[in-house]
Image (cartoon, rainbow, N blue to C red; front, side, top):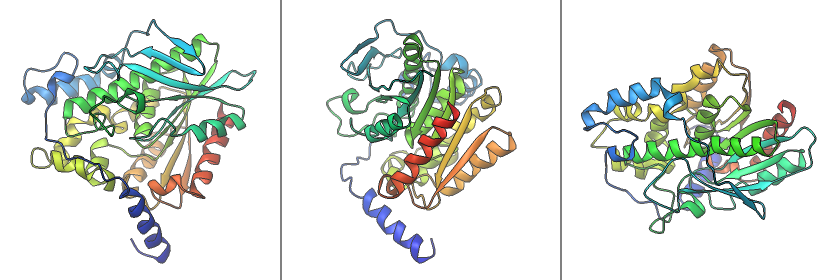
Length: 335
């Protein structure tokens, strides 16, 4: 990283990333029992995952929850995916409504390890642009976190199967939120995801035709590459390295990676905003550029917003305003 400005951003980014001192290196586990209809042994996992990626419409299918409850601005329901943790299986989403004759709504997914207040300011900014926002807590986040956790470690960890299961659960929970919004009369639905939320949002949009616009705030091709190279996930890599290589991890986590579903976007009418940060050390720019190239090659309708910062610094002034305004303007114009 060269140049005075780049070095300044990198120092700031590193300082922000190092605020978290509770990252744990967890042991490697295959976690086959976390998978639906799991293979009998890890040796059969590549074939299992390849088949389920090919049949992803079935892998991410679900039964609409029957217990939607809405009170005091909070939507709750039982996840269509069952985990061993009752807390995690109670999905929570907060609604920020506006009076809008067009009946537009945006599902908002914050970043990995976001607390209950993450992206609330963004939801209120969306309101200023005339858009209703539904902010969903992803699996193992805030109120869905089991008591033994301080971080949302069970969503992304050195347990291969559990990471796949958590991602699948969050994606299906998003689709359930679409069901609820549709039942409330919302006619135009978009999704906005940041960092891990961007990955969830992308795969949900690739499998959910009712989502008409998507904002993917920080983009990368494969979850494995982010984990392997990003400064905020080195503790996860340490738990995996020695058991798997980067290429092997990419194969196992392709089923939960945006790159595997780019081809599905060609069959949708989704309009996308792709946001990336030039100095990112979590979602490395080389991976973001690969996404941009894929969108161009596939002639997918999209716009691009390049941020002059890195990952954590996106949440700091003035970059948070540059980012937030760009996302809100895009959604207002496309919904």
